[in-house]
Amino acid sequence: MGIGWRPEIDLTVERLDGIGFVEVIAENVEPARLPESLAVLRGRGVPVVPHGVGLGVGGADRPDPDRLGHLAACAGALGSTIVSEHLAFVRGGGMEAGHLLPVPRTRDALSVIVENVRIAQESLPVPLALENVAALFGWPDDELTEAQFLGELVERTGVKLLVDVANLYTNEVNLGLDARAALDALPVDEVAYVHVAGGHGHGGIWHDTHTASPPREVLDLLTELCGRTSPPGVLLEWDDAYPSDAVLAGELGRIRGAMSRA
Image 1 (cartoon, one colour):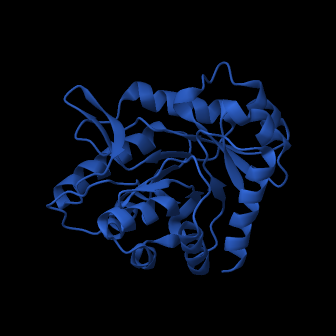
Image 2 (image 1 turned 60 degrees about the horizontal axis):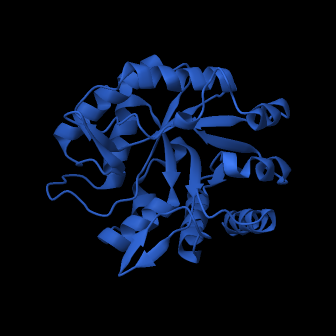
Image 3 (image 1 turned 135 degrees about the vertical axis):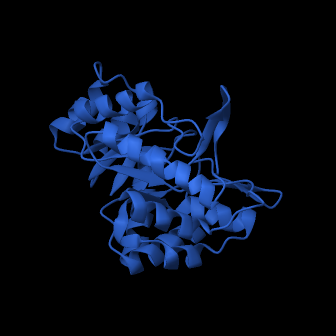
């Protein structure tokens, strides 16, 4: 069981019972000057996974060497055994999207992304896992489902998967994509770990804010996933409006319960 490490809850993370690993946003740490809390956790033997948000393997541009170097340095400084990023479009033509946008699921896009992933893998000292993203829109010319796209990417590159069940739920609500059908088609044996998070609905749209308790539907998807495979780790993301230690401990308990129901 894991939790996303954030500076605002560093002491909370240190105090929580049963934390098997943590994840840190790679862009928020400097490898040469790691926060003391991460050093404390590492000293206890708690694995730390660097989680990037800005590499942008889903764009036409090749991965930025400086960003790859930073991810590699984070992995080295933290003694990590894996690095994770998003399968997302984040920039193009010198402009930043400001959001993790879905990639067009076409054969042409897949070929570009395969090459980008291979470049990233060659630059990193540890395996790479890619996360499925939450979307507010879909591209009109998609040729593959998300599961098919991810499956072919795994087959062609050997990249691992970071399955975010909250993002699957988001895409089901917003785009009508069947989350359970996606779990049926994903290569679940290649799952490195899993994300769970909450959000808010407004006007029929689900916003994956990471600022609330994961809804029952997300936990049900976690149960479904755990019925198909035994993921090496499941991690709670909470990025703002942080609750008390007791509430976070309770949320971890809810996640454990969802896993045990499988």
